[in-house]
Length: 391
Image (cartoon, rainbow, N blue to C red; front, side, top):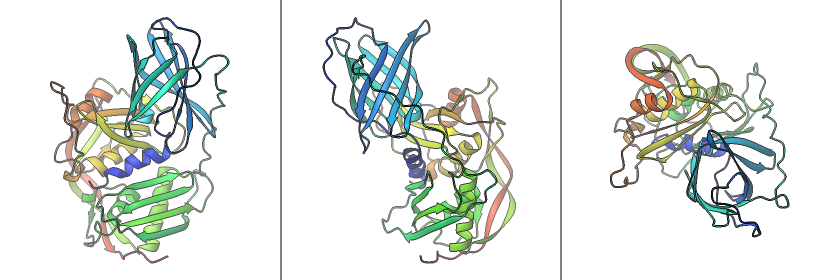
């Protein structure tokens, strides 16, 4: 499935880790009344490195609410949970920033919750009610990452390019984690598409190896700080010119396109809770369809995600929305999406309703709309390109 896996990995590498199992702490001696779940619940999770997590639950006149805090080495950042609900002894909530939902059972004495996080990597865990004696110290939230100067014109200080012999046809990873850039199993088409924010149909005169040859790239920028998405594109453009000898000219061509705009009833997007200049995109099986989880993304970045990975034509952002947002969309893909290789979804439960198509889902769930029109778009017309020079 061409290009699908990259954004899943972007999300995994740039944002908070997924959750796993942990063992309960010492048994509590106090029995709590049914329905009394307010307070802090602690657990240890292990996504490759043991990490402590605190789920803080509160109740108001409007119902239950919650926050999740991962106690990372660099500090704990509380992030809001949504759809927190208690039905009998069953607790449910959603953690959009983790692309996960939780369902657990409160013990008879009200001191532990055994449950499961369903997300890209489903995992079980047991959360234990914290007491005054057992409560963990929660460090201050981490400082925002040091960003690269806005006027910086970065290049790769060091970049290694190696052929990838896995035989896989899909881009597996494109990550900027702090100052370390990693690409795995990427093609020339992937690199041009990212560098110039174009869809495959906007690249013409390409060699026959553009999508066949695959590469691994590792690099670091020559300027201090974490680059923005646009600065990372600049770095990639320079790499293409230097190591692939890419020369091209731009043309305008009338092509079928999609326009992303705000729907007539207004948008339903939540401002992001995360710091940083880079968005996260994750995909997993959702309720009757495929769920795309988006964190810390601008509308330009969301439009780029749609036309690079999902749709078969360019997507133009005309929402006029500023800022970064967290949201999710659950839809049923069709054969025209994901380059004809839509993710296979598990069989739905008997009687379960299928998710709407992408266009209806975007309008119903986040208040935006995608409309089709033919318009003039930029085309990358390749004049010269070579296979990359060796390291």
